[in-house]
Amino acid sequence: MTIDVQTVADLGPDDRAAFFDRDAGIESVRGDVREIVERVRTEGDVAVREYTSEFDDVEVGNLEITDDCERAYDEIDDGMRDAIERAAANVREFHEAQRPEDWRREFSEGRTLGRRFRPIERVGVYVPGGSAAYPSSAIMGIVPAVVAGVDHVSVVTPPADDMHPVTLAAIHAAGADAVYCVGGAQAIAGLAYGTETITRVQKVVGPGNKWVTAAKAEVRGDVEIDFLAGPSEVVVVADESADPELVAAELVAQAEHDPNASVVAVTDDAETADAVAAAVDEQADAREREAVIRDALGNDASGVLRARSMSEAILFAEEYAPEHLSIIAEDDESLLERIDSAGSVFLGPNTPVAAGDYASGTNHVLPTNGGARVTGGLAVETFLRSTTVQRLSETGLADMGETITTLATAEGLEAHAESVRSRLEDETSDDE
Ligand code: HSO
Ligand code: ZN
Image 1 (tube, rainbow, N blue to C red):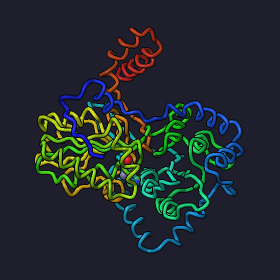
Image 2: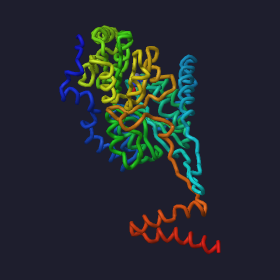
Image 3: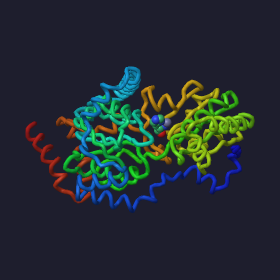
Image 4: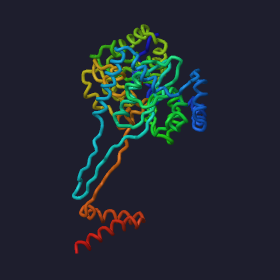
């Protein structure tokens, strides 16, 4: 298969929509998911076990596997433990730098306002398992919660006859408090509503397949969620200075995640576009997950594109609002200035997306399907709630008295106005 280079300017409205309105594919399972969620909500562990047997083909003994994670951590080889610890340390360090400080400030005389931040008490993290076991996602989901100071971090991860030891070890290293071997929609429902075994949480986060994502959409409202994180996406914006092999490597890497992954290269240079298309084809051939990669490359939201200018290329990336944006171009910082919508940005030829996927320290749980237009990825703030605090002095209140009473009267809320007036009157009589 050879990959055709398309021209941005020639894309019709339907082609553009295919790039910009990517479908997370959750519609197809919505009905089934609703039923699973409802049964877990009303029947608890019995339903969890039944679905686990049906979908994962595993008869689980203990649903809780917290101790198994500690054991796996002790038993994996030293090199693996070091890799987990190093990645977790970098993620911890970057997230600690995000922790907001409580603050107060006097905005005008006698009017002091501030914000304080407190962790959510109980959160649930979904850690994907099965054929795509992701120890890295355990670190990305759990560490920010721990850094935020969450009291109880529950983790759910799909069961298997042989649970992936590195995933279990990473869950332990990241600092989970309780771990349950349950996956899919039944796991999300268990966290959202609680069962005899699973502690009910206040917020559910983490990436998953379409069942997990549809279940998060279903329980939203009864429990907080982070956002809907679907199949991986990358847009690489490249100019003629970029090495086509590196650009292609970025596309092929994210394509190997999922047949529904979306991967795009966009460049103003015709030769670069042709070379990237050829390199993608060649590299895909050499990869073990070639079939997955080829499916992803064939998606309507994937492709190698030629723009008339870098300006057009960067506008395309902005409109795409990708999960990952890589800029490999001479003027990368000024191109970045024109980007508002991207989950995570990777600048320069030495910054592969895989660095952020595993170990540089940024979070890899990021909004897909255009979610970057309205939200960022998992962060310490995801696990915090904020409270505002104020104190007014007599002068501070007097200064605003008329403003408040005027507006309160306009709203027909005389008692509001009175609660202010009575204080101001007290103050006048005190002064006399
Ligand atoms: N690129 C994925 C995260 C990941 N990559 C995990 C490797 N392992 C997020 O879109
Ligand atoms: Zn990845």
